[in-house]
Amino acid sequence: MSSIHLHLLLNHVPVIGTVLGVLLLAVAVARRSDELGRIALWLFALLAGTSVLVFLTGEPAEELVEKLPGFSEALTERHEEAALVATVVVGLVGLFSLAVLAIFRKRPLARWATPVALVLSLGAAGAMGYAANLGGQIRHTEIRAASSATLDRGSDEGERRER
Image (cartoon, rainbow, N blue to C red):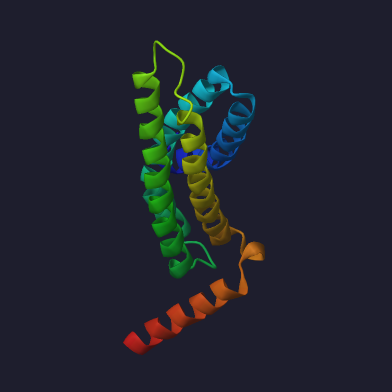
């Protein structure tokens, strides 16, 4: 399996995983469940690692799609930048999760830990969703927004002026 296949196989995991993690944390807060909180924190620790792997395999995937018709350098760059931010945010939530799990490994989670993780995870889910939307636009032209088309035209005009 190549890194391109790995990117395509795993790129949905952080997106769907962060949404599931947010839901788990919300239920854990509502029920004051230490067990669900711990499961959600472990999920975010795993998602952090997966996010890094997906990000690192993105460049080889870009090299493949840039040869295909309809490729947009502007969209790909926007996706890459958003993916970096999302990876950092999920990574920080993962580190926070591991720290909380380590600190409270032999005792119940502090009352503040799960709500704080929930707030942080909302940011992670939003960042991942935005990066995923931009990534989807690279190959799925049917979901490209009018702003993306404008961005592409501006990029093409800039390239023509440079020549």
